[in-house]
Image (cartoon, rainbow, N blue to C red; front, side, top):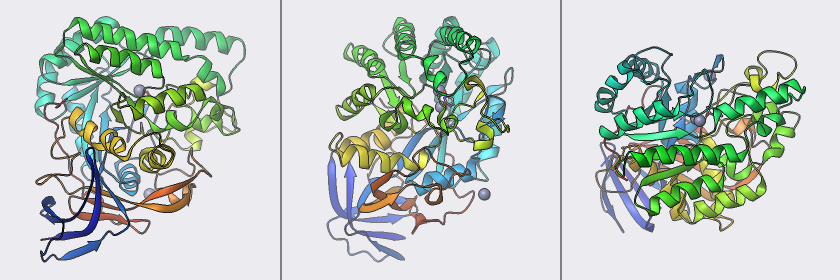
Length: 461
Ligand code: DUC
Ligand code: ZN
Ligand code: ZN
Ligand code: ZN
């Protein structure tokens, strides 16, 4: 054996398993109460909580957006990921307008392969529904890109019309793929942005006034309706859901037999709109914006009840300089690049604010951070499950370690965090990716380029 984990308490969606775990060639090969195997490396995990390595299904590394490119490339971004117990990211390919999706896939592979420390899969953002684009979809699915993101906002940059969404959803579904949707009403948002700017209301907090909750709920209803017209074979999920009502829309379709789901992100669970009123509020600008504490409560309830299917980070990092567009003063809210860091803090935020406070069970945390995401993005059973033959990917949490979050303890390529000064109990202390320790004692030791591309196959939801 290459690795033996002794006295591991592994949390699964069905409950914790106390066992020894043997690993060979990167796979889990034996699990038993007391293994007598010889191994080149033995790690005693007494007192720790072991989770299947997280599958963060929502990252934007090297993302060209709003006139700039995100500050975390595939090296810095996956360094942050593995430090947080994330062993697989699923990143969004963002093809330049008018370009071939397949060419963009090749660009993303050549950007990522030499740099990644975690393993990774890829989704495809589709920004037009031309005959050429539609024709490429089956080939992409063949290359393992089985999930697609369609935008209902960011007019002129990423937004699609309802007709285009219909056409793409049809093509993707006919070929066994899954449709992810950024659900916000982009047309009305642009009207509101114009109104606020004309009144001179330009501070970061007005970002939230121009993207009210109703416009997420409306877009969710609209895209679910479009999907339902195409029948129950459609697999669809709303990315970064920020409202309980959007979850309710998808849940009601699910009760009728549709495979419709929601993803949320940790920042909607713990931050509210006041973040945008801080002196450094520009750093917090992302879309959808943070909501009220009442909405946070609704999201926690729906996460605890299993109605929210996955939690991804929407890791989309800009330096403070980028957020200010390299000016001394903060630009009007509509010019601030949208996005916040998050992959490294999924586990401590969910554990501290969710599990420790009794809002979600550890089983639910495992389901939404690995099991469900691996199934939705077609990475199951290689990823997202603690099973014989699956990749030996683990996050090892010290449930009693209290850490004050500061930029110094994190690994992104920026010098701030949206959780600065927040103290959490429960911290990832070791990450194992395919049987190799890639993070321990605060240090990322996995080498650049040692991560692998994991092609997706048909989603199993
Ligand atoms: N929202 C963000 O905050 N950033 C990237 C794109 C998005 O939808
Ligand atoms: Zn989005
Ligand atoms: Zn995103
Ligand atoms: Zn660096």
